[in-house]
Image (cartoon, rainbow, N blue to C red):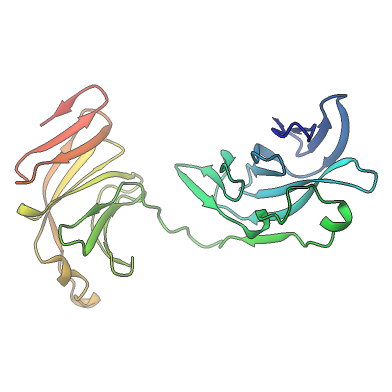
Length: 273
C-alpha cells in the first residue's frame, strides 16, 4: 500500500493478493475505485502525487494518473503499460522530478522515461480529458534476454577499449568509439555473474572476479585493436588464463598497482595481496 504524498490528494492505494488495486479516501476510508487484475506486488507514487507506478509478479509494469470522474470523485486512469518483462518486478520508485521511474528485478535495475509522464499542467485532469488519451503499451521481446553487464567498467589507458563482466560469466571487450561489443575474451563458469574487472596493462593482464569468489587473471596475447580484425573462422584465443584462484569469500573490490605486479583482493572480512 502507499499514501499519496500530495496533501491535496487524499488517497491511499492498496494492492490485494487476488489482483485488485483499490483506491481509498483515507479521511473517511471510503472506497473510490477498484481495478481488477493488476497484481501489484510493488507500487509507488510520484513526489507530486499525480502518478502511480505498479510492478507485478508477472513482469508487467503499469502507470496510472490520479484523476477525477464526472462527479469529481478521485480515480486512477491508466496511461502506460510495459508487458513481458522477463521476471517478477521486485520494486519500483519514481525520480524526484516524476518524469522517470525505475524497476528492480532479479539482480538488475532498469530506468524508464516514458513521454506519458510529461504533464502540461500541475492540475488533475477530469475523466473527459483523460479518456481522450490512449494507453501506451510497450511489449518487450519474448526471445532470449541478452546477458546484462554486472560489473563496473574498466577502460584501457589509450581510452579505445573497455572490459566488462556479464551475468553469464563472460568477460567482454567493448569499443569506446561506438559502444559495440568486440568479443568475449574468456569465461568464468556458467551460472555466475562477473562482478569486478580490472586492467593490468603494463603486463598485458586482465583480472576478473565473480560472485562465487573465483578470481581469474588472463594474459592478453595480442593487441586489443587486433582482436576485432580476426575472422570468425580463424579466431585465436585473445587471452590465456595464467591464474585461477578461489578467494575465501565474496570479492568486494580488485585493486592493481601501476606496475601490475601486485593485486589486492578485498573482501568483507579479509583482504589478500
